[in-house]
Length: 474
Ligand code: DPN
Ligand code: ZN
Image (cartoon, rainbow, N blue to C red):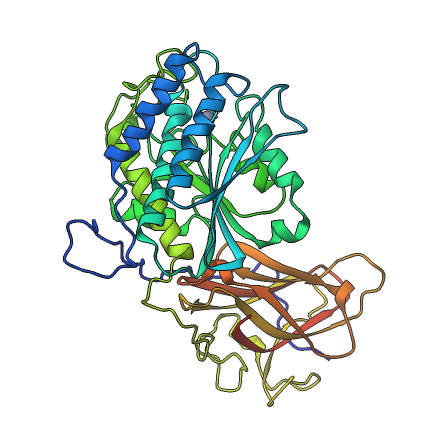
């Protein structure tokens, strides 16, 4: 039997994640801090040297680096040669379906250290349009990524996770190289990719500071770095669905990335905070012959390059500050035995209720079971230790329902921040507690608000009895 409060339309104050930002490493060449694993400064002059090479390649090949031309193949050879010289094993992947006829290959380079089950990918399209040499679109992303890869090899830090770089072919004809790559992976290989970061046009002369999926967990380190520079980044709305991150998105892989904008125009509010010309395109040379070496915003290019390195270090390098994964106490009062703190929300659901039983001990959280339109949530803010690269949130759930059939009427969700990690319903009901888990690896080193919510429709009860919430590694 179930209790009292049926709360239609109650709005819940969910505590938002408000952990302290990870410290941003200072320029490693000028600091006296000798911590080898701090994220390095990527030398923008070296990034620009790669752009010079790509410009010269276009110059020798009819002025462009389009995917079907020699300018593209020469771009591949340049990037490949620099990577191999730094110790990478580099793979050329011919695009055998979906690409423009005659398009050159994707280029893939993995840094062969760290946990191969947790892969973080960083990519940029290496092809350009026919109209010009494609320095901002996308020599900028290609060169920033190349220099980041070379910096990683040169620093050779101890790795927690795996890093894989990609330079895509035939993006300009429809995201074809990246689509082919993701499509060609097995589902197991796709599942190992914990996030994909895209860099397309990161040096727009009248640009802004845009981040793909800016509020997502994947974007957190990208945003933390630009926030630390006071850049007030915004969502990359112009680029949504228009570059290679979309190929990963379509398979449910978390994505983020930096961009400075294409043909859309800067607003007056943006000009006020970032400088530049309001009413003009972020990149006035987008897809034009004037996308040359003079069409590069060096400051933006530097900030993007350093943020890529920062993100890579946060995600995959053993930063020493938290190499181990101490999960004890990460979730407070996960067994609900000691009062309600630190849970927030509808804490009245926590107790030793009659009519239901705990998985362990005497108390548990009874969400739902009202049989009327209602929503009940409990939340707490959890810091996932940085070393927990295999973190999962385990919980015991007993679902008991008066509903029948195979339609989901009453739902239970597990969220981390704004991201729903699990959804269960009356359809999943069973006779006792079942242990379930969600993957929190992507939150290692972060503070995030976990929320368990039951929402019921207007009739027939479904109870979601929750107990013994813990953080585990593995
Ligand atoms: N970089 C553009 C292209 O490759 O044509 C696509 C794009 C447009 C990406 C706008 C981001 C923003
Ligand atoms: Zn582009």
